[in-house]
Length: 321
Image 1 (cartoon, rainbow, N blue to C red):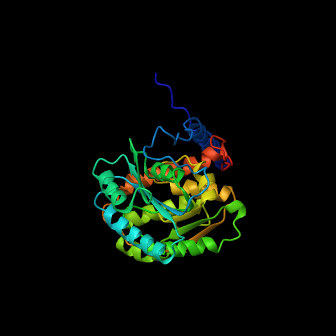
Image 2 (image 1 turned 135 degrees about the vertical axis):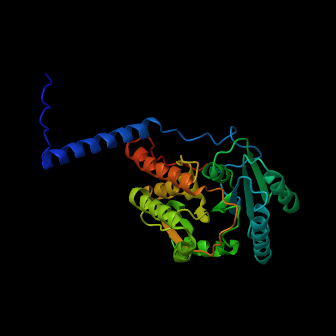
Image 3 (image 1 turned 180 degrees about the vertical axis):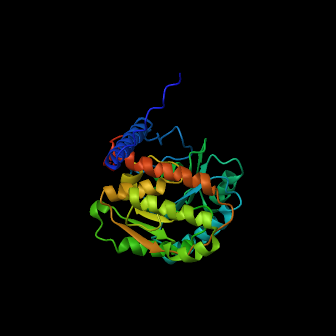
């Protein structure tokens, strides 16, 4: 004889809410534990990853400006950017002989002729003005920029993308932004180029899906990490040497979300940050894969916040020599 089914015992509303809250708390603790356990220490940026560099960010500056150009498979886009940048820098030096500069192209394990193209500029302008550092393995944009910054000799250090999407002469705008932040606490300040003023036009040209991804990413950046800067991802950023030392020495993220961690560190260390509108044009050939890259960045944003919150990553002040 079959037994009658047990009567269902529906949870009351308060009990259901309590159960959901307990589940949410459990999942949060689990994610925090995963973020903490999987946290990696900062990579060694000395001999292991780079070739062709003898200078060090810890040493006193010997140039007024260093331009760091991370490059991965950029044999086609790099020449346009280098021609524009070096034309500007050479003219500026002729107008002001006291102005000194260097351009550091970091070849991020490219499989094409990026290194060869960069070395042609080094031959043309001299290895003191154009330096090429080649990484044996691809580390990602953040890893490449970090390597270049650690090899810089400039009093100010500019990050500039290899595609030349930002008009190089706009360095004067970010320099003005940096100047307006004076007095710099402990010599530290950052000026970020921004495309936020172009957002309406860019939305009109994007698909609904990419627009949704963009808004989702901006919300996560604001909610988890950086609230004061509207455009964290523009690759045109100018840092004082001391600010570069302190932020990049604490940087962990080596892929696309490194800009967010950089600015998160700056905010935590009370480094003043300016955001300045720059001219920007989208250049074909981006290495960013819309869905998967945004997904990876979203994960990195969450882990940035959780790893600092749980103490897996800690900020340490560095000293110059």
